[in-house]
Image 1 (spheres, one colour):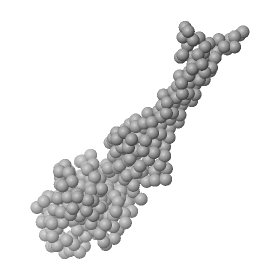
Image 2: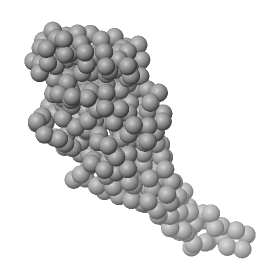
Image 3: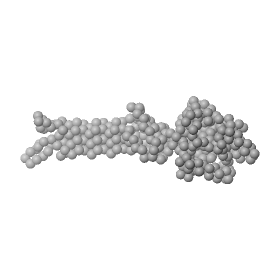
Image 4: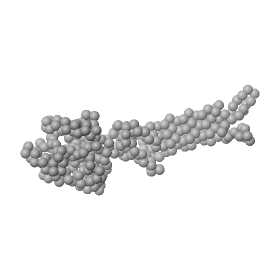
Length: 323
């Protein structure tokens, strides 16, 4: 199951306590303060990785804690700092600290961002020595590490996203072109979550079907429109079963525009799908109609090996150019 939003609890490590200890010299039980400081607690970082299905693994493990610092030692030795904790998240994740409302975004592979600070270590009694207090018995405890609930929302960063009305043949096509195993059905909203597939080193995503009013929350709503924002190229599927292919095309483009005009500037390839239901003449006619909106119009049937090879060639060439 693909997961694109989740809330986890995270706690940075607390600082170790400072201690009250004494130097021991021959003939002197207490030759002066020698209590070391506590170590700093480990901090929490988020790290961007190329694993778009990673959030699903956190459905059962929702609490993360860094290691606390050690208490101080004798001979004025500091306690060991606690290890920092890295939480891997998919590229494209936005993390909101629900206590402070701070927002952190991961956009590039390997990016590492500090989100919660570990607590400072306490002070040992050697810090409190003075001309009037040569044998201080004071020390301070370590500070607590920061903790918070972190809301994580993923906006897919993929090379090309299949868009279109429900039942436009997107899932069938991505299954043929990639290793995706998207659920396929002859009814609307078979796809309830994005499906991902590898295509010659590129990542393709099957975005759930849009309907008129999606930008206002109708149907599956704008929850899935956000995934298109960071997609480099749009593969707009229009089913040949539509009597009015231009209307089907315009409906989806209108929803993109209402959500964000920036989406209209992305490179778009139009794909006339399910062409096995048409004659060659009908296919040609509908392609010419769609070319009124976009000159790059391909046609495909998932049961036609020749059309699949052609679309594979064209998509591969265009993705390489975009990259």
